[in-house]
Length: 256
Image (cartoon, rainbow, N blue to C red; front, top):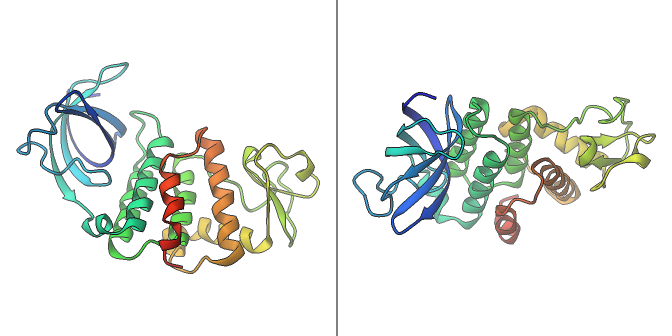
């Protein structure tokens, strides 16, 4: 990695260090996930101002080489887009916090993920412009999984590739998606039933991206798709996302 970097990034997380410093995790265009040490970040408004708030799009200057246990140094940062409307609404805050944590957990350090970066900026922009919607969040989850190379297979049996038929299926996170009748008895842990309507909703959102999330996703299909993707994501990242608890608490505030 070069000794000096100027980049566009989304702030994924900040962790206080010592009395005045912070460790900042960024998702940067062209560079992927980076961790940087911001010296005196809580004391120096000249260099950092309020730009280190989570889910802020920033222009940042970093130096150092990173790698191993060494952190890059965050020399300066300026907000490019703060997404102010998100910060006054609990449902939008919960969705933005969840989206940034998911982006952080799906990526490894210093591996470029420009598709995921663009997706996250797009999703934050939509949250900034309109109320949080369950369908848009499900679409983001599916698109984030695809961008990181972990998308579930929804067009056929995830285990053998056979057609799924017209009725309900077994959704098996450990096997990569829904299973046909022959494979269903051998499903791994975390399996759950998924109706034809729930599967159709997931297929629509996977194919249409964030634009497909503008439509309604209520009733049984909404509940099933939420549960199926939560289990799939928990299996994929190895643990339940911390932001999920807050999201569940304010989930009733999301617009249908």
